[in-house]
Image (cartoon, rainbow, N blue to C red; front, side):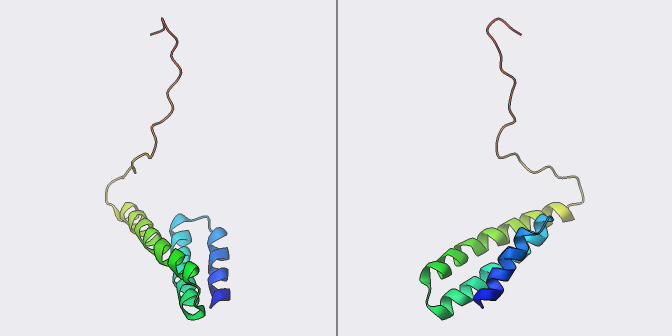
Length: 90
């Protein structure tokens, strides 16, 4: 199971499509959680149980955008950079 999980993770790094990447990452989370459970590796199990909902949430966001009937612009996480203003300039 560990090799399957590693292969899924490696495959996700080769993806150029974000939805496919997240689906592979979620599958890797499930495989690593199973591996961690059966091998008694609590840190591996805990990490991938924590990452799985993050990947599921991101998949839901991507699907919402792709299936939206209107053009959807996702919110910016940071404000765009503004040009520097010098004293006395308008």
